Length: 148
Image (cartoon, rainbow, N blue to C red):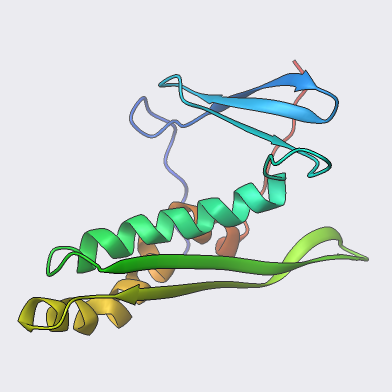
């Protein structure tokens, strides 16, 4: 039995607004006033939309894993790499072979051992239920497009 999605509430609703700032360049603004920039990946250092999606997947999971393992020890180093292959086929353009790799070190000792011990479970939790970004991609939620 599949559950029906819950109706949007003030606590569940998320949005960003895009503003065109140049040729193939945009500013994204969130409800709190935070801004980031993206474009086509030409001459500027801006992220492409695909890179932003990979960053969102990696970032969401990194926060989950850091919250879980970080209760045991603070990491000495914490790096996450998200990757995929952009393909164009009969289904259109999309990413395949999505992968998220964590390279994390913890200090020697009991606390570090505890953090290392929970890493496999933390990765399972972020993959299977915690990270809404990767969960949405994995489950394939449809996207509705509208013109105002």
